[in-house]
Each structure stands twice: as C-alpha cells, then as structure tokens.
Image 1 (cartoon, rainbow, N blue to C red):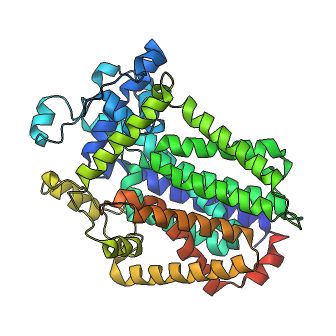
Image 2 (spheres, one colour):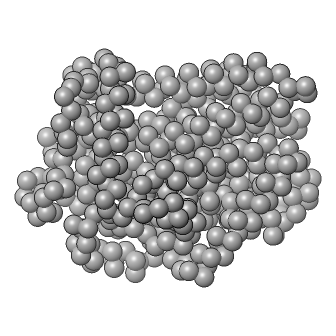
Length: 442
C-alpha cells in the first residue's frame, strides 16, 4: 500500500475509535461523583464573575463544602464543565448541589443534588471528548515503539477497554487525567527521539530546546491539575528526561539535563499553580490542608473495599488491567440502584470489548512479555523503552500505596499496561530490526 494510503488508513482508524468512545457517552450508568464534580463547576462562575478572591483558601475547612472539595480535586474538569454549562446558556444556579453521601439517593434528588439526564450528559462531554482524543497520543506512543505493529493494537485496546470507557465517559476527572497523561508521555518520547536520533523528523525536531522542555512542563502541569494522581506521570517524565539527557553525551555531562529538567519542573509547577487559584493567597497553608484532608479521606474510604495486606495490593496490580470487570460504583449504598442501567449498558454495543477471563489472561501474558521485551530493549540503550519502563514502575509503586480496591485509582497503571500488552503482541508479530529499516521510509 502506498505511504499516502497508509496514512489515510491511520487517520480513518483513529477517527473511528474516537467516534466509538464518544458514541456511548450518554449510555454509561451514572455515578454520584459526577453530580459532585458538576457542583464544583460553580468555581468557574465564581472565578469569572468575582475573581480569584472568591476561591481563596480560608480556614477552617468544613467537610463536604465547596472549599473542601476544591482542595481535594483537580481544576481542569470542573472548569471545562463550567465552560460547557455557560456556553449552553445555563447559569450557576442551575448546577446541582453537593451530593450528600450519608443520605439516600431519593433524599439527594429531592434536595436538588442530582441533575437531569440532559444536564448530566452535557457535563459528560467535558471528559468524554478528552478520552476520545487520547486515541491520538497512545497511537503515537505505539508508533515510536514499534510503528503500526504496536500503534494499532495499543489504540484499539485503549478505545475498547471497558474500564477506560466507563470512567472516561463519565463527568469526572478521569477523562482529563487520561488525556494529559498520555499526551505528556508522547511529548516526552518525541523529545527523546528528536534529541537522540540523527534521522528524526517531525515537529519536535524544529522546536528549540526551551520549547521542547517548556511544552513538556505545560503538559505535566495540566496532568497534575487534572487530578493529583497526575504526579505519577510528572515523576516518571521528569526522571526519564533527566536520565536520558545525562546519557546523551559520552562521557556523561549532567549539568545541561539538570538545568533543562529543572526548567521543565518549574514550568509544570507554574502551570499547575496558575490553574489553582485557591492556592494563590496562602499556598503553603493550603498545601498542608490538602495533605491533611486527603489523608483523612483515604482513611475514611479505606473502610470500604479495603486491601487487607500487601498480597491484596500486588494482586490488584496484576488483575486490574485486564482481569477485573468494570466497577460501576464503590459505595455499598448504591448496590441495587443501578441494576437496570448497568444491564442496559452491558447489553449494548458501546461498553467496549467484554473479553472475559481467557482473553484477559492472554492480554496479561502479553503485557508480561512486553515488559520483558522492553527490559531487553532498555539494556540495548533504547531510551524510549526507558521512558515506558520508568512510567510503568512509577504507576506500579503508586498502586502499592492505594489502600482500597477502587478501580479508578488503577487507571494510571492500566494505561501503561495497555502499552505493555501491545508491545508484547507487536514483539510476536513483527521483528524490530525490520521496522527500523521501515522507519526511514514510513
């Protein structure tokens, strides 16, 4: 097939997957956290109409207030919901109230804490569109590793993964976290290729160093501003950029990479800070309050679906990517409330690939093979393999710190597990040496 047709096929494939992700957005069973994040969209209107002072940190912190939720959550999603809400002609007064988890669903409906279906579906586009756009960076990550032999299965697994579809389509933080995590890692890999390959092509080659590293910093900042667990990607990206920069010269000269990575970290911190106006008036006090409230929340949540020991945590790392069914709710109080919408969604063609245990075992084995393959590549000084392995290690370590078996908390690891499984499949199908020669003409 001519190269032009191949590229058209690539675009058509990616567009089809993105449309599939978007198509099932309105059919996903609801989650009470969606209502909470919609309530947080009031911050967009407060910032727009009253300025940053309306969001300023002001102790004491009362549980289940806007200030409490503002500290605990990211800013990207709530502001996107606010933008969509305002663009539709709705006012802040029409946003739902803060969902009271201690009260039953009927009470919350009666007290205006549950939006209409139309309002919920509108808010979901803020997350679903970013989840759909995530097809592009995961395709490009696969391309840099093993051309189409990895790009196609990685994008396909991503767009058909039932856990990604469930959480990415909901009006929650996961859509922005997924997209900016993948975009950050793709930008990092493109930066590595531009700086270490004599035959590199593309937009990154044309950018000056400050734009390469500054762009990475902005994306990392957006990732952390999407959800605090974006720190996993931030740590992985900065460490990779430092290590690959150090080995660029022989003998190694660490000063240049240290300065550039420091610049990246500064840009990422400034980006996050600029998107977090509730920290502007008292950043250190607000940060201490965030850590305190986050610790208290994790302790409270750990009573439900808690891991009992280290074995439980290791088992979750092994089973969550491909061997666990979608978790539609976490709170026992929602048991039985979603039976009908869950059944309807599962019987539809929009819930992804329900592969079951046999295929899940195969995908897990492929991910293990992909991990071994990348370790072998890393020993041959393949710096892209370094990036994926460091990302996988950071995500796995973060999973060990998760005190409960909440599937959403494993999404950062699921993303890299998809890359590993696609690498394992690509390793079986195509020899890397043959693709290296293809790269010059692809």
